[in-house]
Image 1 (cartoon, one colour):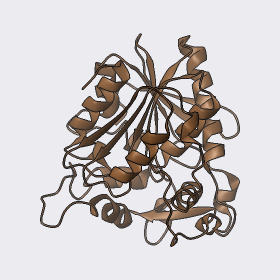
Image 2 (cartoon, rainbow, N blue to C red):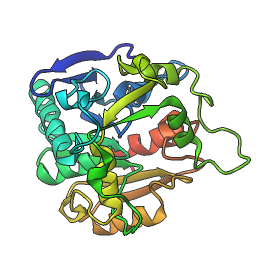
Image 3 (cartoon, one colour):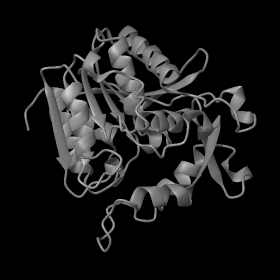
Image 4 (cartoon, rainbow, N blue to C red):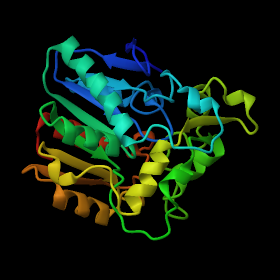
Length: 305
């Protein structure tokens, strides 16, 4: 699954798994979402090709990492405690982890500016980082961003718990929920034939649970509850770098109103909105990924579609 990736551990509290597809090109960092780590996202290969492969072929020095509590990164001791409690891994803590990875990238590559591609909840943490460290961010791509909404039906953020369990059946149901009724499957693996076992293997303790499930920090869900209740963790007005919002035509998590709200507030003079046909919130696992790859690659290169 990782092929030619270089895998290292960034030591500290917490220890973070970092993966890299090195090149002499400009560095780009992928930031994953709420429920699966980088190996199952930017690093996952369909027919022998991943999003990391695509970005590398376009000339980028590609980086990714796992947030604490996911994949190959450290699990906090509280992940072994009762679920009831303050959600772990909320956006401020996640932005601090991004800052550690970026500092490492700058040290290794000598590049003072990096581009960031973030997905779903990861866009909250990445955008927060971009507002805190504008001097470090060259370009910011927000894929399926979770943004401000004014819903009255959202639970209080703290009710998300320290951690949550996610089964493969829950993932599959979430992945297909936005596909129009009667439409053929858009997932490259309609039943997650290989991705599913790899997902369960991302948590060594998954087989010990009934049903088999992956434990993930509760902070991302808490951040989504907060954002959709009107309390987004960052101020878009503070984002000054070029911004791309890219989303699927059928993505209910990041729809036309969300994109318009966000882009109307970003103060960068360069901001784009790309909507990919027949895509949902999980386009990097779908046949529409080619449109996603092209839109992101062109944006990172500064090219107009």
